Length: 144
Image 1 (cartoon, one colour):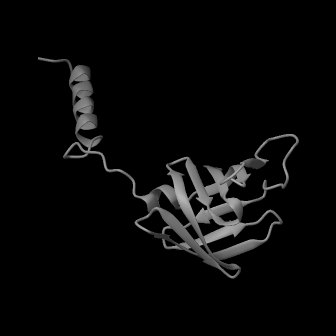
Image 2 (cartoon, one colour):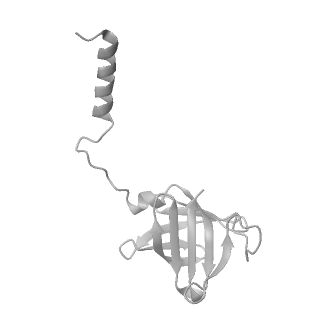
Image 3 (spheres, one colour):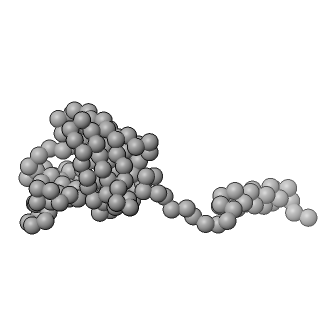
């Protein structure tokens, strides 16, 4: 017969094994909405003229050489299709967003217009997007 301490430890291990995994043992991948929403996104790198000669227009934490200061910029995409943006000037813009073209692009509408971007990378910590307009823009964003 096992001592009481060993019996309790064995029961705890059994309980952890039973309740720490899904019953069918499979992992569920996050949807693109789950990857994008309910996080605060900030610029890491911002390139212009991406289609021809890419120019690093802004890079977070770069001491010199930025053409603009995007340190204030923030985006929060909500799962309900709304979003809020803080511009480089501190203005707050609210609007709606949705995936388009089989979730390969995002369309954002706000009082300033409707904008489409193509998703390059989207995971838990990175959201990279690009546009073809004005010579092309590539933005690399990270979670704040």
